[in-house]
Image 1 (tube, rainbow, N blue to C red):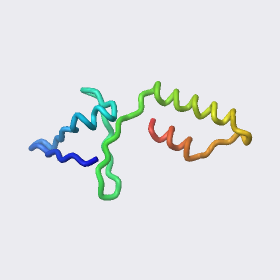
Image 2 (cartoon, rainbow, N blue to C red):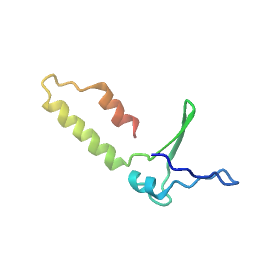
Image 3 (spheres, helix red, strand yellow):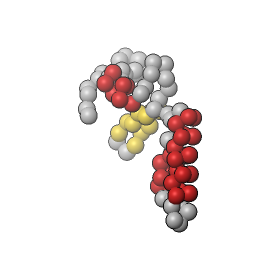
Length: 82
């Protein structure tokens, strides 16, 4: 999804409401701005409750698996969004 927006004279941008709503970004909430290669990426930090819920889900998946191991990329995905 690409929506054009402008940078104002103080370097600020407005994140379009459609994107804020889809990502669950609330007024006054902090976001993370990163440079990845030639792109600027804006993400919403994960709330502690979301992280705990994800960790519990992963723990259940590990317990249910026959090998008692989980894909390290799943762990990285949950941990990386903290």
